Structure formats: structure tokens, C-alpha cells
Length: 480
Ligand SMILES: [Zn+2]
Image 1 (cartoon, rainbow, N blue to C red):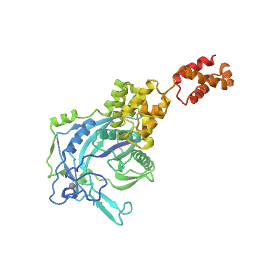
Image 2: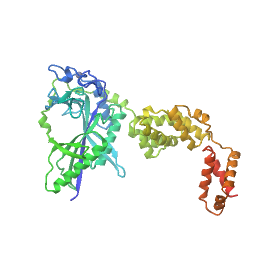
Image 3: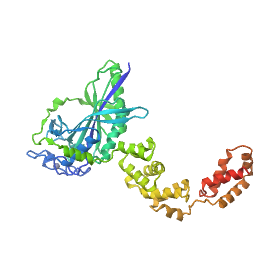
């Protein structure tokens, strides 16, 4: 029997606000344990939550950018459970009437058609604190509770079970990551847990319309691990069923070291949490004007920008996709095009030399030492025939190192291209004289030797000879 995996994702997006969701404490990561707390986020009796308006603004932006409807009147609810990192005994979340509902994202898996993935809901909630254990932290013994993270604002983005493979899940997740970082509402740092994912995985026989029992894999925090965890889980469930066993509904943990998931606890149902509207918080009413104002203020989103790069700048789809991977990268590229004019040439350099240098040095595009303007100046030197494309790469490396302008480097290092036919002819004559054998071969019909001559001339001119002129003169002279 063949099986079809069914996957839904619940993604926790930590919002990039300066302060927490219901109090004024800082959300800065990595501070001394419990140094960023107050009666509200410590859950002390009588302390009252006050909603941070920025959180609502960010949630609306996320909803509009993922094609959701914004709920005019949404409700905060208490999700009741006990855990040592949750002193109140409940988490403030949204249950019925979440702030955003019924959205979607279109994804494209390589080699397949576009596919629409439904977003059931996006709701606002607070994060819990963190347990710190002696075996994995600096703690000497026992375990401690750090409540700095308690009350940090989160969005939970819940997809429909529309995903059918680990590849689709990763593409969807990357797309969501791209959007929330593009909007500037999340720093996207997966290692610090700012963007983490729970995956609901089940399998059913191909052709069936009855969903299998699902297991939930908790808190996976890298794209690679999401792929591995889902693949392991699919395999585990199929093997279990084929052995005559049954998948049980449960929460599982993925261990990146073993590449396996293991059972953590039986899966609870919504009614176990005894959700009820939080009496300390009034319903959240969002006016039509607020939503429209937010819509007007949205930046051009990655998909729109990609489409525009193809339509207006004539870029190939692939280039447009790569260049809109992040907002900063696309802005760098556009500034370069504005200064130079030739979009495809700028695209090649940004995707080539710039990206290579960024990767090699672990630099982000925001801190790129070569500005878009300087890149454009360099490309203009190629256009003007002052330097060859090959020499330009040398100049680029020097710009990266020194921060000097391309022209200054070209002058200093004497890299100006030689287009003077007289000078190049002299070089060619010398090389032909020194390689009479090869000249004979060429004239005898072995045209491959041509490349050898080009190489020799370029070498003799230290890369400065204009390649077009070299080609032209060589052909004329070799043909004799
Ligand atoms: Zn606080």
C-alpha cells in the first residue's frame, strides 16, 4: 500500500517589540535571568495586564500580508495548565475569535506547480518563561526558572493540513519566515527561538479522504530539522501501521543528534485547557480605518517585488527570486540598478561577486562594505572599456578590503585596460614568433589552438588587454 503524508504547521513568531505584550518589561534576549520582570509577567496576585498596541499593529500586518481577514472584535482567552515556567497557571492567548482568520500563501516547490496552502488562523499570545537545567547551562546544580521570556509577544500561525511532503512544509515555512522578517515584525532568528515550528504529521492510504491520527512534533527550530523531523515521522508512522500497530495522538520531540522523534506526552485536546475569556482584558476592537491604514502602510511584499523585477526590469524569474530573498538584498540591488541602469548586469554581480564575498566573510548585506553606488561605478568602468570584466573582479576584491573607490584602485594598481591596437599587436607578434609550432597547427585547421593564443596574450598583458580587441587582431594575424 502507498501512503500519503498530511502535514499542518503551527508556527510561533516572536514579535520584535521593545517591550512585552502586557507590561513594560524589555524583551531583549540574553539578559541576566529574571532581570526583566515585574509583577505582571511574574504573575503576582492583583497585577493587571495592559495590552501593547504595537503587538496588535504587527498582528494586523502579518494577517494582511498572508491574505487573512482581520477580525473586528477578537477575544483574549486563558489557556489553563500548570508548568513551572508559567507562574500564573494560565497563558493568555486567543481561542475563539482570533485576530486573523482564513488566509493563504502560495508556494512553489521546485519542479511542481504553484500550490495554495490555507492559513486557518493567526492568534496573539504571550510566551512562557524558560526552565534552565544544570546539565545544559551554567547552573551549578538543580534547575532554575528564568521568567525574562514570560509575557513576550508571539503570533501563532496555524496552517490547514494542506502540506503533502517535507519539501512543501519547508517551502511554506521559508515563505512565512521571509514575510515576517520582511515586514520587520520578527527578527527571524531561529537559533534564539524567535521563529519556531510545531509540525502535525499523519499518513493515510493514497486515495483515501479519511485523515490518519496525527502526532505533533514540538518546537523545531531550523528548516533542516523540520525537514528531517517530518521525514522521520512519516517513515515511523508507515512502518508502525504496516506492522499492524496504530499511531496514537501524542506530542513528540525531535532530537537532531539521533535524527529521531520520541514521545513526550499524550496529546491534550483543546477542552483540556478549559479556555475562557480573560476577565482582565476587554475584547480587542479593531476599526475598519485602522485596518485600512495598516494596509496602506504595508511595504511592497516579496511576491509583488519579484513580479515587478520580472515585468519592469526584465529579469529572469530565477534572478528575481534570488534577489527578493530578503528585503535588504532587494533594496541593495535596486539602488545598484538606479545608479547604473543595466538591471541584468547588476543582478549578475549581486548574485555573483557580492553574494560570494558576503558568504565568505559571514557578512550580512546590511553591512556590505561595497555600497550599491560603488558597485555601479565599478560596472561603469567596464562599460567604458577602462577595465575588463576579469580585472573588475580584482578591483572588486580590493574595494571590499580597502573601501576605496574603484577608480582610485584602478589608477593605483595600473589596471587600466589596453585597447590600443598597436600595443596589443606587438604582444601578438612576439607570441606568434615564440610559438611557431602552434601557429602552424592553427593554420593546418586545428582551431582549438586559438584559445592558447588568447591565454598567452592576456597573460603577457597581465590581464589588461581588451579581450575583444585581442580576438579581432589574433584572428586577422593567425589567418596570415
Ligand atoms: Zn513585566
